[in-house]
Image 1 (cartoon, rainbow, N blue to C red):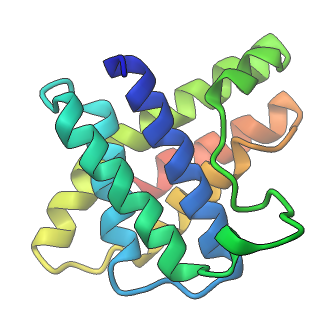
Image 2 (image 1 turned 180 degrees about the vertical axis):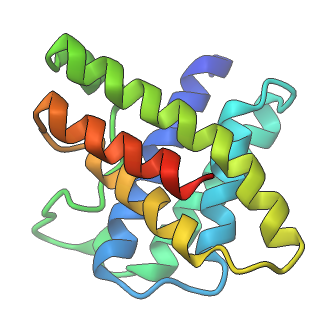
Length: 157
């Protein structure tokens, strides 16, 4: 699989993990797996093998959080992996803001990962990570997206 496609697939799986966490209890590993995945998807030095490992970890964590989704006879789609190519179908301004937010989130993940390693409380930051990842899948007006983007920036100061 091509490197860029694997990065997009990892981001899509992270979005699914975030959405799954909205309706199911997270484990003690969920936040770390989410942050590590965001860092890996942004950092150029990670090779395909490492990206695949992170993708597998994200998928496994989603299964742990919501084990019945993978065998559901009537899937709702709420925990399905998101295809980032769907963003191309959105209005140009919204598309641009969502891509910016994803990029900002990935940059912020590096700082949050360091704080996690220092055993600092990152619960407030984690809330915005889950919120932004979930929001990417929904339709919003540009001004609403800009408010959320500002909230992201404020939380990550």
